[in-house]
Length: 319
Picture 1 (cartoon, rainbow, N blue to C red):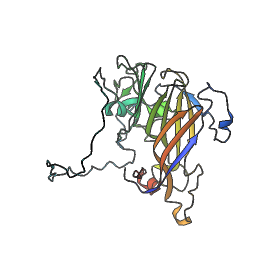
Picture 2 (picture 1 turned 90 degrees about the vertical axis):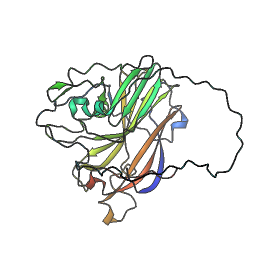
Picture 3 (picture 1 turned 135 degrees about the horizontal axis):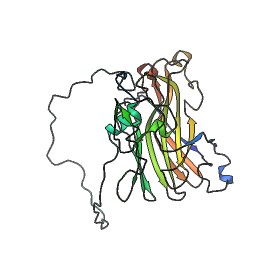
Picture 4 (picture 1 turned 90 degrees about the horizontal axis):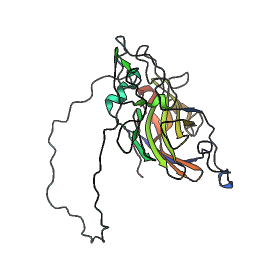
């Protein structure tokens, strides 16, 4: 994504009810508390199977024009010696890494055809991957799956028979869409064209001390009444899912953190003539856990004309 950089923001967020394993302490007194928004499980939500009358919108921006032609020039590769300074290397630890086994994770087909095909084609995949307690959790734009760390087989319920697209069941290896995981309607209803929230930029960790999985994603709300005109609205929030046990195939607690600007609906420190066309947006968010605290950090960008184009455009700031 192409971006205009304003600044980088790191925020600490405490999620207490998700863990349920530590008593409240004085260290938490000055930290913001995030209330529980709901619970869920990795199961496909309700949907209308897409059929012959499906809308042709393939991308969340609504722009289905073909992309640029492939580069037809020549790229030269240098094979000579570099001119960097010579340094002496230190002693290296002995290591004999060995490949044990691998398995196929989520792919574009599974993301596009989960939830009856009521999904968009998205890039980049923005993978989140974490493992613990014999499970491997994977999430991408915009799908979710849980695998056995021993065999690589999906451990979610088989949903092929009910995953109907154009009249036929589609095998997505039991994957579900991220909108279902966070309790939202489909990204798009391909019969009516109605858009749902856009969940993006997922990340995942397994915390060994609490034996819990944490999945964090940014959610962009669809168009609502307000100053932003276009596919998306000015409202965005971080959605944090925390497994209720060490088994990620079971129940999850869901927390929603308003990050529209600084959690207020009106852009900060902007002149009046710019408030209708700029807003703050977190990107490339990360999550970590330490004792009873959950730390969330993200790159914060000002986005100009995002709602008009249908998708925010940002770039990573220098770290």
